[in-house]
Amino acid sequence: METLGRVTLTLTVILVIDFLRRLIRARLTFYKLKKQELPMPSWNPVLGHLQKLDESLKRLPKGCQATELFSLMSHDFPDTSRSFYADCWPFGNPLLVINSPELAIQVCQEHDLPKPPILIPFFKPFAGDGNLFVVNGKEWRHSRSLFNPGFSAAAMLEHMPHIITEAEAYVEKLQYHAKKGDTFSLDEITCDYMMDVIGVVTLNSHLKFQNGYNALASAMRSSLRWHCLPEEPNLFVRWNPIRPIVQAYNGYKMNRYISTELDKRYEEWKSGKATDRAKSVIDIVIADYMSQRQAAEGLDAEFKHWAITAIRLFLFAGHDSTAATIAYSCYLLSKHPDKLSKLRDEHSEVFGTDLSAATEILKQHPQSINELPYTTAIIKEVLRLFPPASGMRGGLPNVYLHDKYGNKFPTENLNVWVNHSALHRNPEYWPEPHSFIPERWLAKPGDPLYPPKRGWRPFEYGPRNCIGQSLAMLDIKITLVMTARRFDFKDKYAELDSSRPLRGISTVYGERAYQITQGAAHPADGLPCQVTLRG
Image (tube, rainbow, N blue to C red):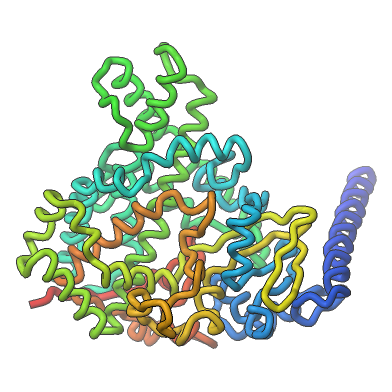
């Protein structure tokens, strides 16, 4: 017992010393920044900005995503484009929060800062180790150049028939709820729908998750429900011992499922049954593999690990944020009937008044999906108000950002965070920043509504922009074409809140459907909804 006590005491002392060492290092970083009179909230040499963070948290709903917290803090810096430093240790790494287009351009385009290690634990439950999103340098360049052709706008149009097939199943699901007259989670059923779409694009197969069980899709959605951000302040949530077990099991199920699909596809390529043109992600990786090696008994284990990781990343990124954007599109259109009417008029003008004809026109003339300027404007405005993610980069020695006020921002030993939510609602660049105004995307240069250069960044810019943005825009357009004239949506937040009264603040920017983090940013409480058939 005495030996155990000594060991425990020694470990405790080591942990305390390590904690104090890291605390001092973090605070010294900000002490030096403060001496340079760089923008930051009121700073305490012991607590850093934790007190300011706590004050801001009390002005937001419980569970609200962190982007809104830092957006709120940015209001203290109206004369510096609202960009500032934030000392969040031990709940987060030192941050330089970017809320202006000029600085964002420098971060992601001029300097193209690398992805930082903090992203690795965030993506690991979904994609595994070493995925395309978190790697840098030669490894990233190889993977990106390999997948770029498969995600071009022209390549995405070739998937149109498959996307329409899944969209028709989504319409049937909505019709079911309309006839039933029940309240359901619009976000949840839309996630299931997008899982089926990305299943075709990645694995060249129909998962049929909208109407039944699929092991791969189920494991991915389970990992998202169990996800916990590395900076989660609630230690009981962060250190839940069940989470790593569930996530490891989900990872095993995803790996096994994709491994089987890779083996099947490899045998088809060896036998000559597969097409020689790579259209899906699984075909792209197998085609690349076959071009560099002679056919063997089975796939190389190292290659297989890399391929599984790539496919898992595309499955996650290709369904999660797109589903949230579709749900928010329905939500905002339901609250703005004048905008919805204009959208419906555009669809009738392009596809005719016969709703059933739209799918056939799209199949026969895929390019017609690009003849919808107002639909595109609506999607861009939804993504401005409710961006599904932000951009995180790692600072480097001797890399400084410069704003128009003469500030020189060092980036060394910092995570540089392009906060899309704050940037998209920065009143210095966006007139009526919290209003839903699709017309701003049809405005001409010189119009007060005309968007600022590179001020809209949901897919980011630069070499590491979102590879799947053409697919995302295509998915959302097709969905709106097939649903906007068929259904009326109405959120049921009032009914939900009356059944379980909320304590404290329940909106952000006046919206009850504020964003929470579940992988990407999703509407709170799954966006409870009721749908009715028109006419």
